[in-house]
Figure: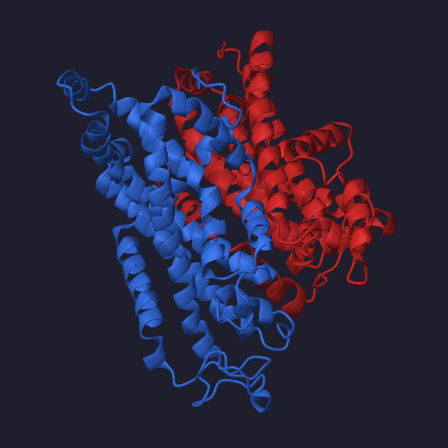
Amino acid sequence: MSQTPYSPLSGARTLPRLLSGISRKRPRGATLVAAIVLLLIVAMAIFAPWLTQHDPSEIAPAQRLQGMSAEHWLGTDAYGRDLFARVIYGAQVSLTVGVGVALATLLVGLPLGLLAGYFRSIDAVLMRFMDGLMAIPGILAAIAIVSLTSANLWTLMIAIMIPEIPQVVRLIRSQVLSIREEAYVEAAQLMGTPTLTIIWRHLMPNTLAPLIVQCTYICAAAILTEATLSFLGVGLSSETPTWGNIMADGRTFFQLKPSLIFWAGLLLSLCILSINLLGDAARDALDPKMQRREG
Amino acid sequence: MFSYFIRRLLTAIPVMLVVALSVFLLLRLSPGDPATIIAGDMANPEQVANIRRALGLDEPILTQFLLWIGNLLQGDLGTSLISQTTVSSMIAQRLEPTVSLALAAILITVLIAVPLGVIAAWRQGSWIDNLVMSVSVVGFSVPVFVIAYLLIQVFAIELRWLPVQGFRGLDKGLGEFLSRLILPALTLSSVYIALIARMTRASMLEVLREDYIRTARAKGLSQRVVLFRHALRNAAVPILTVVGAGFAMMVSGVVVTESVFNIPGLGRLIVDAVLARDYPVIQALILLTAGLYVVINLLIDLSYAITDPRIRY
């Protein structure tokens, strides 16, 4: 506390750290269960066409709001669409967005963070810009960006990605700032190693462990944001089966038939929870220092 | 202290400039010409040109930016493209529900999360500690709208204790006001409770190791006095930080909660504005939120200096 830096958003910096330590004393089994749950969801997404004969977007007004049956395992929604098909196809969108956003944030954030950490001149300008981006709550930024274009998978991923970038840049930058003072970096500089080689061969690999951990949390956050946008009606078009869309559609008849919302909500929560728990496990495995301090 | 305050205030200026610039460019990047939208489908090119001139849209982009900033500094947030009313009056109309919701949620959070965190730290490793920590993991991962429907299902549909949705102002009576506020406020506080309970626990664990806590116990002070008067007071600073850091979560929570419970607040306003492509409203709301965020973090940093005499700048 005593060396609190006077950055306009010093408070904001503690949040990722806090969230990253969601469960300190986690029973070993929880990680295993999380891995199994996530694997099942991934399998469900990949094998969706084989798991159900129904088209998730096929409207059948005559069969609206049916209960569970052998034909419709989870019943049908207000348009007669098969709920089971919609829920399992919904996993495809969520996982694509989660993984896509995590990778894209990494690809954009890593070089920016390396440059900011190594070059003082870039640092000053870039970090002020990142501070500004961080001041806009992610969901509002995403909503605003989506409002510029019609939402398709690409614009949606970009809208979710942009607010996540500052966190990655900050993380990489702080890693680089501490590593660049190490003797081996100084040695490389004295030997005349080209700057880009130093950054890529000596600095970058040292940032990977915390970066991987951060990316799992970004993946979970992206899935949550996508679902929220869909739910609010500003995400992918409502025919697309996403967990957020399913829940938004189910709102009207929720009192009559809670299962319209229940299954998508359950899978969404389980998916995010498992990814967060796996992120914690990855952090413990990749960061021996952290383990020693907490264990 | 004073020079720290000034330095700290100065760092907020570039941040707000970046925010303003991003938000301004957002409108520029938007497809469709605002003048055409305002003029409507029936307008001829001359009318559109007139509106464009009236809005200053024919000026160079830098002039437009400066004009816009100048208007903002004078408190003019712009005019809605759809309703033609000023954005400030739209915001003023929607302020009461959102402020009541946020304050109620913060109150619930403090009343639930802080005692939970204190008890979890006091009984570290016990079943109650494990329970609090497990529930907080779930609290982080379950989306706000899922929690909202769980609460509605239990308290409004099964038990019929509370209304399903809607909002009544305080002027319609306290009972009406509170009965419609409880479920949304509980929903909104769910993420915050997880966050604050965790932080309280972590911060308390650190403080409880201090010598002065041992001294206080040795003096024979009661457990309650040690925990709440000696330990919690010193643990308060990090907890306060999280309140600021959780602001983004709060904003997201407000948007979703107002949508689920059909509350006509600022969160609904921005969703409606996005659906209607009402860019001035979107701009103003984002700018205000970011401004509020910067101010909250500024106040929190200053409160460190005031509450903790050990911090010197």
